[in-house]
Length: 134
Image (cartoon, rainbow, N blue to C red; front, side):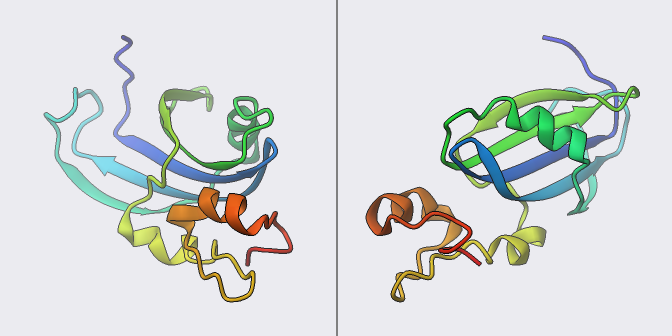
C-alpha cells in the first residue's frame, strides 16, 4: 500500500442513476501533518467542499450501469490527480454537510424516503431523478 503525502483528505458521496452522477456532496478533512498513518493523526477541521469536474469524471468511470449511493475516499496528489483509497455503497459525509444531502428525498406521493435509503425508494417507488428527487 502506498503512503500518500498530504494533510487533506476528501470524502465525496455521489447520487448515481444508471451510471450518471446526478448529485454529489463532499467533505474535506484537514489533519495536523503531511505524512501519517491513520489513526495516528489529529483532525484539525472539516468543511463542505466543491469537487472539480475532472474528479467527477474520474469517479464516473467507476460507475457504468450503477444506480444508488456511492462514497469515494481519496487524497489529491500534487499533480491534481486523485489517489482513491476506497469506495463504499453508503453515505460517507460528515454531519457538517448533512444539510446539503437532505435534498435527496423522494417526492413520490409523500414517500419521504431519505438519502440513506435512496436505493430502496428507487426499487419501491420506481422514481428516477430528476423528476423524483429535489
